[in-house]
Length: 249
View 1 (cartoon, rainbow, N blue to C red):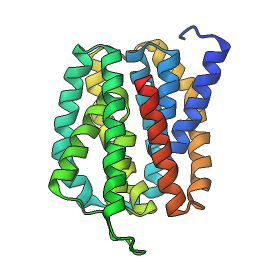
View 2 (view 1 turned 180 degrees about the vertical axis):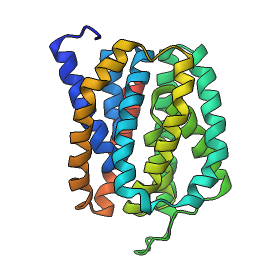
View 3 (view 1 turned 90 degrees about the vertical axis):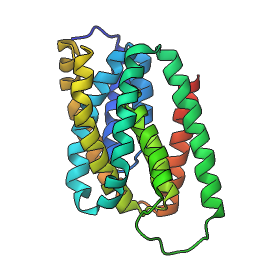
């Protein structure tokens, strides 16, 4: 087991609950958990530890929203995401942690600005069709999403911005996100294992924290049933901004 102070364990416990909630109610909210893990553990260790707990949350997200995924969107994103994963793997192996975090923070803030501008220009129709988005938009967000999720498990805010930009309804948003990250997180495992990041102490620590992810996921399911579309969008944007600012700091 990794030796940690009580305050550090408390921070990781909050992070684990947050991961569960983010998977079933607030996509992009996992950036808080990423920040807490990175504050407590070495950067590369935190990436591996967070990934395994995110995969626990993926199981609950799939169970709850598996029928709401928009598969054309996933297929449209796939080529760009794979390219981003490969670039992110190379960057993770070569670049310093400080450079990586600040780069992701700047990119997230820029994407929030672009997304809000796009939404401002769009008509304020009450009815929203399933996500469409052009190839260029999917390529840009997909590449960045693959890159950020490989480097820092921070792909959630990026993909949240994509789904908001394409005006995706809550249930479709959650279902498509669930399948997207369930698939991507499994793909990431051999890459991080190849860097030797899954040490036995990390696995044991995650085994202790996993039940808290389950609790958070169940809480998230209760929250999601009462979530209004406008409130949902605003919470995702605020959490993304806070995460981006943290990465810059």
